[in-house]
Length: 83
Image (cartoon, rainbow, N blue to C red; front, side, top):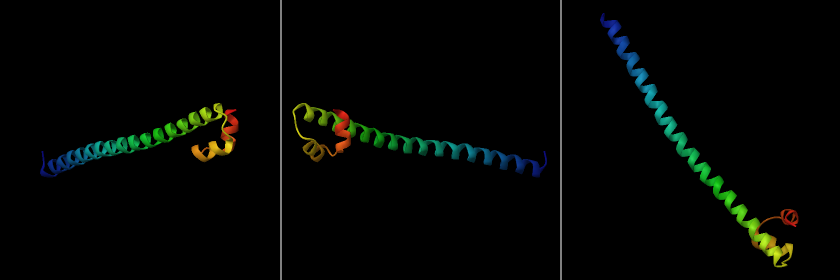
């Protein structure tokens, strides 16, 4: 094996090793970002579901749409859809 061939082989090995390492790092970062976004979306959905359930209970107790909007933050249109 010539010197040039040996250098090329080592260069190619190093490049492949670096590529593999870079992919692993990128995947790890992607998973972290995905988990963070998923938690944020889950929290938002949970809050919205809680607001709707609270509004339903308030409607059952006979409270006005204005009060329900004031205390839950959901719109009058959303409240009318619950009726």
